Amino acid sequence: MATTTKSLDGNFSLAELQQTLTAQENLGFKHVTGLQKRDAPPPANIATFEDDTGVDPNPPLVIVQIGAGADFNAIKAGQTAQGRALLFQSQIFIAGVDSSVAVFR
Image (tube, rainbow, N blue to C red; front, side, top):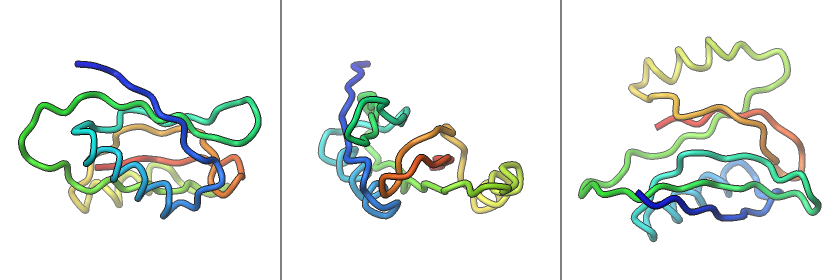
């Protein structure tokens, strides 16, 4: 499988980031495998994609922002109860602010 990366605007809102990642997956026949913030200015996030050899579309990507003091295990349990699996957790920029997120599918 081929791995590609794409730089995404660190000023995107959570909804814009989720929509952009979903569009990139659909247009490139890929699935997101990682997301991290870029340390150099301006604020940006680096998304990592792998080729998707499946014929079925991916289930929707769900990005959950983890607020200060939030219980990650409770967030994970809530998403799991809805049939979603944790893909990864990372530190990224949302609307230009350093944020912790969990990504599910």
